[in-house]
Length: 238
Image (tube, rainbow, N blue to C red; front, side):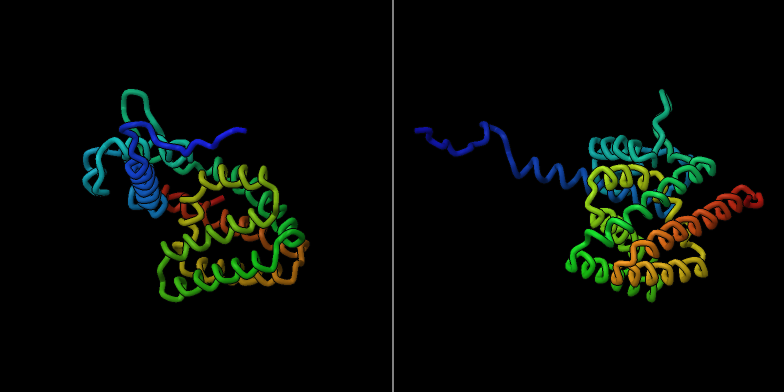
């Protein structure tokens, strides 16, 4: 008969310290990501470790780990012998990614209408109402967090792990662009209306309609992104 032996950490191994380091690592990633996504660190800005460590109240080690992680998301570029900079938003790249995201979200919408539980839909409805509250108060950063949670939850409701994984990877590369599209109050208001229609189609489990709404939602966002990037360069959007 086998005897279960209780797990005991090795001498000197501190589980609490490991958990704290992991939480610190995730916190620094989130803080630095927000600075980039919300435009406080502009594209091509050099990431000065000393200045950022002081600003985020952390040491350089977790900051360096965060920079490397955000490089994997496409938010940071690591330049040989020159450190790291905020990655530029490249219009052609944005077009390519948004087209693919639109197709992925349309597919997820159709699958979610078939596979989502009533509890899943109730959760998305709750996220939607939180998002509306922040919109009403003009709190774009908080609104955007709930907005992204809705899109991620839709992906999860599709019941296809591969689809969700591919989507998360691509979406990380255009998160700044999606935030940028809502800087126009007119577009922000329109996006909220589009989300209301998306929720209605999901509640009705109308997969065909939800596919169209999600694809159009991304297409409309891309138009605003292109206009914003063109304005930054002093050009006319095409």
